[in-house]
Amino acid sequence: MLVILWGNLTPLERDLMSSDDLLDLEFAYVTYQDSCRDLYSPHYYCRRPVRHDGTHAAGFGADRLRWEHQPDDAPHRLLG
Image (cartoon, rainbow, N blue to C red; front, side, top):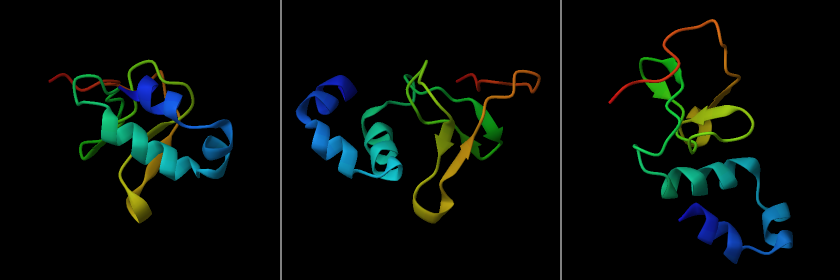
């Protein structure tokens, strides 16, 4: 579904969208089962697609969080 959405955006439209707008689109079209779920805290887990590029992200608006994956921290993915 996300690929179809990206295919409908022109390069100019993608350039004009902020990274927050792009993340909102990802969050809207990625199901819980297809999300990364790297753990930031018990309340925040990554909502980007599995095997995404770049930083992890969760939340919306002023509550948006971004973080780098920390390979020595466990758990890296919530099971569920």
